[in-house]
Amino acid sequence: MIKGFKETTLSNGLKVMLKEIHTAPLISSWIWYRVGSRDEVTGKTGISHWTEHMQFKGTKKFPASILDKSISRDGGTWNAFTYLDWTTYYETMPADKIDLALRLESDRMMNSAFNEKEVNSERTVIISEREGHENEPLFKLSEAVQQAAFRVHPYHHEVIGDMADLRSMDRSDLYNHYRSYYVPNNAVLAVAGDFETASMLKRVRGLFGRIPAGDTPKRLTRVEPEQNGEIRLTVEGPGETTFLEVVYRVPPASHPDFFHLFVLDSLLAGPSNLNMFGGGISNKTSRLYRALVDQEYAVSISGGAAATVDPYLYSFTITVHPNRKPEETLAALDNEIQKVQDELVSEQEVARAIKQARAIFAYGSENITNQGFWLGYAEMFANYHWFQSFLRNLAKVTTRDVQRVARQYFQSSSRVVGIYLPEGKTN
Image (cartoon, rainbow, N blue to C red; front, side):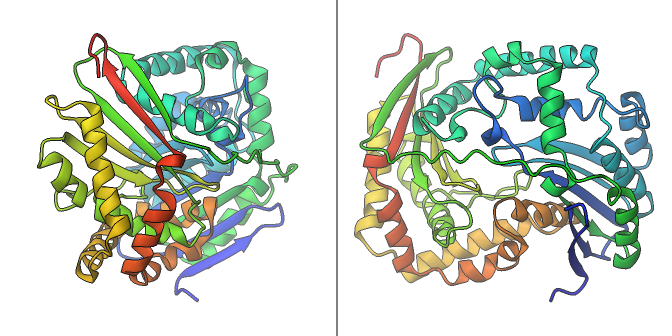
């Protein structure tokens, strides 16, 4: 049992996770909904992200015109994120002001207006956002690779959605999506910071316990068939830089091999931060940096896997050196992966990779906002025990574990290789 931690479920199905942290007079409150881009069907792609935007348009009790001012006036910060498997909203406030955040989230769980004029205004904003992304080479490349990697599973499309759907969806589509998924029995409330558990739980029950449960939404379960052979694609567009994106199919975060892959990631490309707004550390000691960047096959390289509910992708993103062809850079990448597959990595190198992975995990877990984040985030794909045992599981990873997952998952027969070529440049 963790001191200062309590987990309970209200009668309406809302899961509540509370963690007392008395290091600073702050409280971070997060509400997580089990809905993301993977819950969208053709014709409705991007609806989860658009619904998130509409949650900032206010309710009768909390009009949009006062929301941001109220949070800022009380010294707080707030934001929201939509991803593949989830949507979340958070507020980090001075401890004596957290009631505003709790009242706001309980109100907009059931009372958001979805005004027709606001829906149409936000359509313009999101279409403009999508158009901006389409001018970015890495977005164009990543979208093409993701669509090639997932032909059946709804991870197929980007979170922002397809332009055709952004133009055709209407207010009733968005409101029905909101009413279907924004129900307490499809949500997790996570609160971390300077409070007393008994009084906080009483307040949460008073605000959220009265919200009626809805029908538990069914998630799409379309299993992606096995890929038979490498897929290669080329995207052309403006710019002067050539990029490579190479993705391999890897298991979900709840799978034991995820920890082994996390260490392999640290060894090859430098450690990744699973906390999406946490910081990073240098990857200049990683194998791929030394082999690709130092040897002028690439200008930069990064790698990593997301924590997801279903099997997803480990991605290498590489900026190709201007004096190299993408095939040369890809060959250099393959050579380094082959080395890990063929030769047992030394215990010292694995120990260093684990140490770096532990460090970046710690950096993304230390402050109160991050603690609130992890309370709910881990519940979206596993449970809080996953977070609590993360460092212990990393420490158990061996050199043979690293070699095995490199052999098992980094196979060219099941990968997608995407090349972004500036228009007019041949490969």
